[in-house]
Image 1 (cartoon, rainbow, N blue to C red):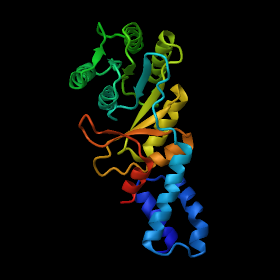
Image 2 (cartoon, helix red, strand yellow; image 1 turned 120 degrees about the horizontal axis):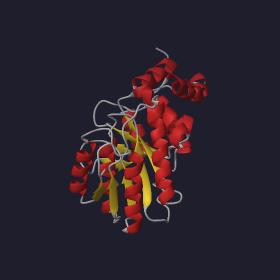
Image 3 (cartoon, rainbow, N blue to C red; image 1 turned 120 degrees about the vertical axis):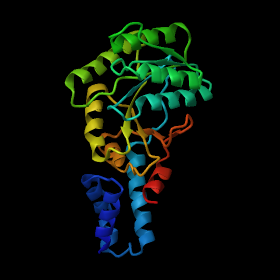
Image 4 (cartoon, rainbow, N blue to C red; image 1 turned 90 degrees about the vertical axis):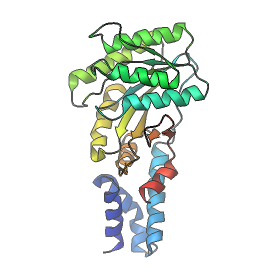
Length: 273
């Protein structure tokens, strides 16, 4: 097997898509042809550098943009089962430990157990929560109510959960637009962040999800979840490269402390371990 084939195999096994794989191989093409890449360690180092360059050049702004107005509003969005509510709870824990006063908003009004799940996270993290006052309440109404309370009672951050939705479902994506508009009416410039949760196990499905959510509401960052198993999550490099949106956090376990700020170098090292 020649060096080019080895590189292709390494990238595809690590969940990189074909487009980004070819792009990386083309970047290394000259070094391959000139015989600069000979040993396995040289190939690995070259791959790491190339992937790291892609991540840092297209998605370098990994800090949360909370601005100067209070409350800052963060919406968590994504498809079903990706880990939105869990990620929100872990983010609440992290921000509270940094000294912020946090209010959670149970905007997932479709799933019966969603509010209960978020209330458990509120209890675990010592944060307050706003839930729907009646059945069949609109998500936009719950989020609007939460942001109003956050504004009136001096909360630093309002974390807004939303229902899981297929990116191909037009009516559900329209509801997400309504949620965004509802919080904008209460606090000018809100939401500060719209974070899309991407399941590390979904592979190439990440890309169409990210495209659609970004087109509809304007994603500002990604949370990459479920990297505690066999998932490599390499496809997120394709997402960052195409959309220029940074990964801000990664979820590596179920504990409250298992949401970590994204470290591009550590991520690349883990992919090619």
